[in-house]
Image 1 (cartoon, rainbow, N blue to C red):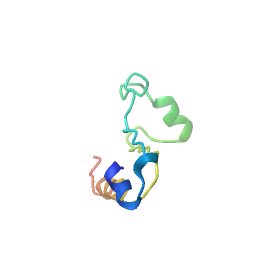
Image 2: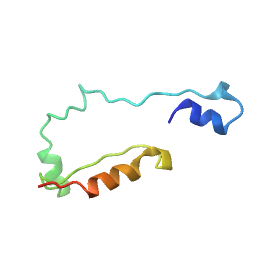
Image 3: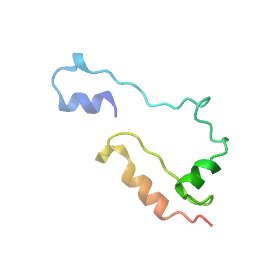
Image 4: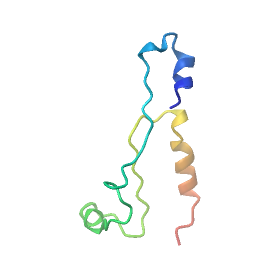
Length: 75
């Protein structure tokens, strides 16, 4: 969420801090073998796994992600 989006809905910005999203690539490395966790939860190797942490509001973009995934040919 952008600070301006929040400011548009509030009158006093002295209590607002924006912490940008980010991923620690040393800790969350896409090259790591995830086969054990996939096996544990029954997720096949060729299945898309999407993780989202946050609030699902219209501006989150989750609708667009879901629509994009649903029209993607995984073959």
